[in-house]
Image (cartoon, rainbow, N blue to C red; front, side, top):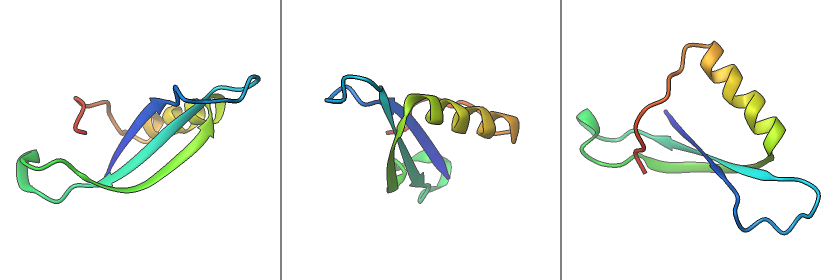
Length: 67
């Protein structure tokens, strides 16, 4: 599984910032094809940061951009 964290730059909320967390499924060997997008969540930036910290604590690692 692959996750991508990206700030929502089209946010119209004047009080909170939001991030998209895209999840994808790896379908090819050695990354020859980009992952297939399976879900997209929009979370407040503080909640997204906590999700990031939990992933890192579980042993996940940052990789080069895949899509």
